[in-house]
Image (cartoon, rainbow, N blue to C red):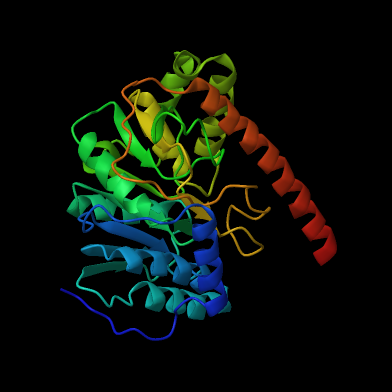
Length: 334
């Protein structure tokens, strides 16, 4: 058992009050169905403010095993050294009975290789588990939602990902508590060693997948062409800046699906000028919700094509907004 004494690095009183207010507004009368048994991986870097809020959410659910992985400071960025140190200190302030393991880099591997290394390290030691980045703020029920679906689909190779984020905030919640998607999302997620073993940062086999028109067969013509373009561009990019595309390709090439909650259980709090990818402004109206247990199982093992179409429509609008705000920021700063 590892423990760390509480101290500096707690979220501010204002942040705690805001988180509580948001949870209350979204029906947070959550009662855990039992002690959490599943391990959690927290990926951190240089954002002590958001790290503190996400860690506080983890502290509330008291996982029995916590893994913390962090990239090293960037060369030529003197401010990184202290911010990286602060984020790591916050993320390891374990004050409940918990086994704590850390993987902290001395040099900067970048925002593709470092998270991928952390997740691989995690699944080398855990058969299944929950993954959070330092800007993905979960509701409390997110953890038990992941735990239940991890157990339910533990040996089902049709499912590779349990996503906690719903890009539409709510999607047909009247019938079931989750549905299936060809896409999903990695802002708060869970998976299994059996699925992650297919991850390949280089996306070997992508050219053959493209030549076989497999994206269109799997996703339909419109979504397939868009997805193919995004993954081909990501494979060509140097240096690589994202691990999510290779993880998506691992699922596509195996015909695997994602579980998506009918109400989002994750809110991304990382939008801002200091973010790597989420620099344009928060996705509108996507907040954390709480589920009630027992969950309503979805017996229809069919991807929701309409949700996947809306997922890409929302991504396109948000991408255009990001680009416009980035151009405005560059003009302002010049």
